[in-house]
Image (tube, rainbow, N blue to C red; front, side, top):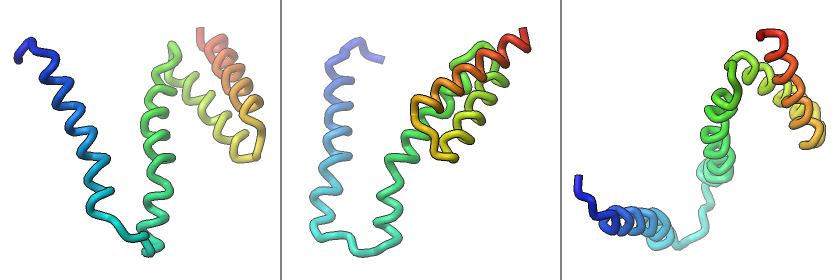
Length: 102
């Protein structure tokens, strides 16, 4: 590998630019297919979940505590609780589970 960091930065910039430019140049009409529209609607949510879930499991000293906090957060969020309640409850549950384990 070369030590020229500017080449790496240039390649990353070109790739990032092309990823954003190609859909704009190839797709000029409005997308009318409902399947494709629904797929594109959920892409940001899935990407966020895929990036967040491994960080949730690695954020504590014990994976069981992290999984317990995640389950509490999912249940409370599904029931329509506020973001503040969900996050505080998940943190408290992780704290209590780690107290029981150690």
